[in-house]
Length: 73
View 1 (cartoon, rainbow, N blue to C red):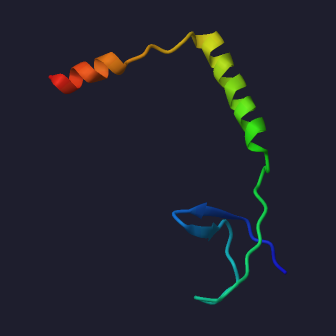
View 2 (view 1 turned 135 degrees about the vertical axis):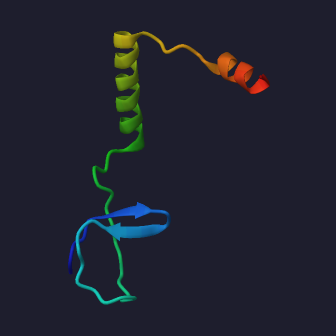
View 3 (view 1 turned 45 degrees about the horizontal axis):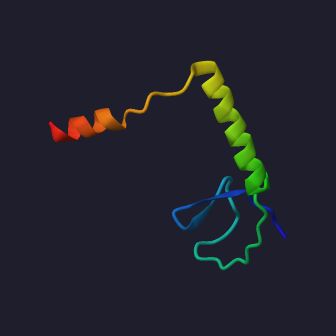
Protein backbone atom coordinates (compact mmCIF):
# COMPACT_ATOMS: atom_id res chain seq x y z
CA UNK A 1 0.00 0.00 0.00
CA UNK A 2 1.27 3.48 -0.87
CA UNK A 3 0.75 6.69 1.02
CA UNK A 4 0.07 9.88 -0.96
CA UNK A 5 -0.52 13.31 0.56
CA UNK A 6 -3.29 15.14 -1.25
CA UNK A 7 -5.54 18.19 -1.09
CA UNK A 8 -9.29 18.00 -1.65
CA UNK A 9 -10.30 20.83 -4.01
CA UNK A 10 -13.47 21.35 -6.02
CA UNK A 11 -14.59 17.77 -5.41
CA UNK A 12 -11.28 16.18 -6.47
CA UNK A 13 -8.33 14.79 -4.51
CA UNK A 14 -5.14 16.35 -5.92
CA UNK A 15 -1.88 14.56 -5.02
CA UNK A 16 0.86 16.81 -3.65
CA UNK A 17 3.60 14.76 -5.32
CA UNK A 18 3.80 12.68 -8.52
CA UNK A 19 2.08 9.30 -8.43
CA UNK A 20 2.95 6.24 -10.48
CA UNK A 21 -0.53 5.49 -11.85
CA UNK A 22 -1.89 5.27 -15.36
CA UNK A 23 -4.71 7.61 -16.41
CA UNK A 24 -8.12 6.52 -15.13
CA UNK A 25 -6.53 3.91 -12.85
CA UNK A 26 -9.05 2.91 -10.21
CA UNK A 27 -7.79 3.18 -6.64
CA UNK A 28 -9.35 2.75 -3.24
CA UNK A 29 -8.85 5.64 -0.84
CA UNK A 30 -8.86 5.79 2.91
CA UNK A 31 -7.76 8.99 4.56
CA UNK A 32 -6.85 10.68 7.81
CA UNK A 33 -7.23 14.42 8.19
CA UNK A 34 -3.84 16.10 8.48
CA UNK A 35 -3.44 17.93 11.74
CA UNK A 36 -6.53 16.09 12.94
CA UNK A 37 -7.42 18.88 15.36
CA UNK A 38 -10.97 18.55 16.64
CA UNK A 39 -13.26 21.44 15.58
CA UNK A 40 -13.86 22.70 19.15
CA UNK A 41 -10.10 22.87 19.77
CA UNK A 42 -9.58 24.69 16.46
CA UNK A 43 -12.38 27.16 17.24
CA UNK A 44 -10.92 27.84 20.68
CA UNK A 45 -7.48 28.48 19.14
CA UNK A 46 -8.95 30.86 16.53
CA UNK A 47 -10.93 32.76 19.16
CA UNK A 48 -7.74 33.18 21.23
CA UNK A 49 -5.94 34.55 18.15
CA UNK A 50 -8.83 36.96 17.50
CA UNK A 51 -8.75 38.16 21.09
CA UNK A 52 -4.98 38.75 20.84
CA UNK A 53 -5.44 40.79 17.64
CA UNK A 54 -8.19 42.91 19.22
CA UNK A 55 -6.01 43.47 22.29
CA UNK A 56 -3.06 44.50 20.12
CA UNK A 57 -4.92 46.49 17.41
CA UNK A 58 -8.19 47.41 19.09
CA UNK A 59 -11.54 46.47 17.59
CA UNK A 60 -11.89 46.95 13.87
CA UNK A 61 -14.41 49.60 12.86
CA UNK A 62 -17.76 48.42 11.54
CA UNK A 63 -17.88 49.64 7.95
CA UNK A 64 -21.37 48.32 7.15
CA UNK A 65 -22.93 51.81 7.11
CA UNK A 66 -20.21 53.12 4.78
CA UNK A 67 -20.75 50.19 2.42
CA UNK A 68 -24.52 50.78 2.44
CA UNK A 69 -24.00 54.49 1.69
CA UNK A 70 -21.71 53.63 -1.25
CA UNK A 71 -24.38 51.35 -2.72
CA UNK A 72 -26.97 54.15 -2.56
CA UNK A 73 -24.74 56.58 -4.47
